[in-house]
Image (cartoon, rainbow, N blue to C red; front, side, top):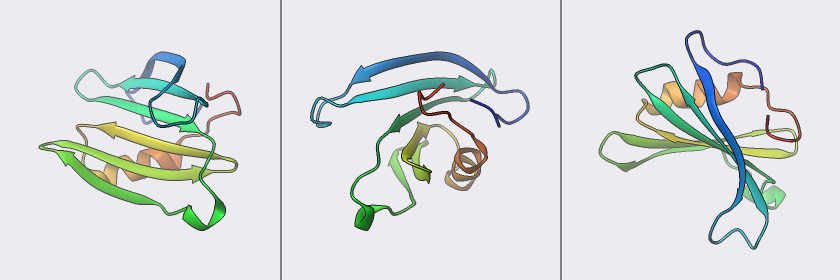
Length: 99
């Protein structure tokens, strides 16, 4: 993975199966700059007609953003403003293995 904003680093990267994913593995990466923690999930995208970039609030200061990179869907969840989170996702370059 490249394109992390200055000060951010990859703390953890694991592959896991999440509920509701039909048994398909999802890459889960945890990023931080020491103040903000952000989870980024990398997975195959939904069908072409459903490829919508979106942002939303999950609860309190926890937001989410979804973007697409080639044949991967990237979803970020964390305590970061929605517009900043989307910009971070668009700046990331993740290889096919989610590293």
